[in-house]
Length: 140
Image (tube, helix red, strand yellow):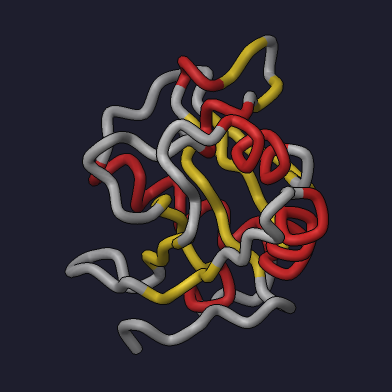
C-alpha cells in the first residue's frame, strides 16, 4: 500500500549504476540524492513475494532490464532497513531519522523510497553504504 512504512526487519535493494561501483565495491555515491529527487529509490524485497534471495534477485534483474539501461558492472545492493536506519540515527550529529515508505509504481509494485536523506549529504550516504549486507550483479 502506497505510503506504508517498510518494517525494520525487512530488506531493500538499491540499483547501483557503473559510476557508483569501483572494483566491484559500491561507493557512497550510490546513496546520494539527485537535486530533483524527494527520496532515494529502492525495492522492497519482501514485497516481491518470492521464497528466496536468488529468486528475488532474478526478479529485480528482470525489472531493471525493463526500466533502465543496465550496465555490465552495475550492482544490486541489499540492505536491512533497521540496520541502516539505526546506524544513521546513532552516527549523525542531528540523530537523523530516515523513513522507508512503499511507493509502488505501475510495473514495479515493490518500489519504495528512503526519505530524510539531505541533498549533498555524503555522511549519510557513507553510513548507508557501510550497511550493505550483500551485492549481486544487476545484469541477469
